[in-house]
Image (cartoon, rainbow, N blue to C red; front, side):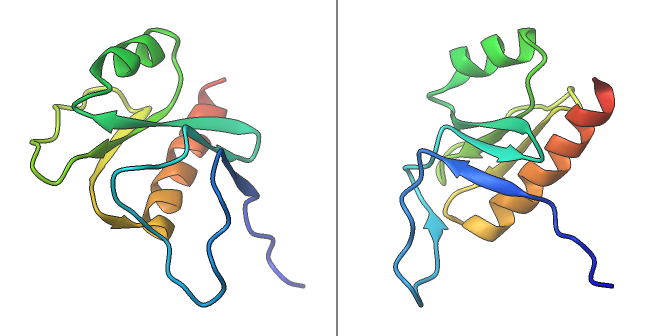
Length: 106
């Protein structure tokens, strides 16, 4: 029997061209849906206000840290960060982990 992979879909993301690697640089979708949990993608540091709003609402979020910016201190288990540019597969792996944590918390 084949193991099932977690279902995820990208919100507000255009499909990439066949044969071309997807790398996230400065533009990204607003969220990734992982097994029914929307993981917010937040640009850092420009999205600091959105980060606070999502944190207060208890929503999982992945901070996309600009290449020239320092990452923030993370004290919430529903938050993680990656420096850009980053391969989209790396971002979805982090989002899956946050989605699992959020699903377990609810």
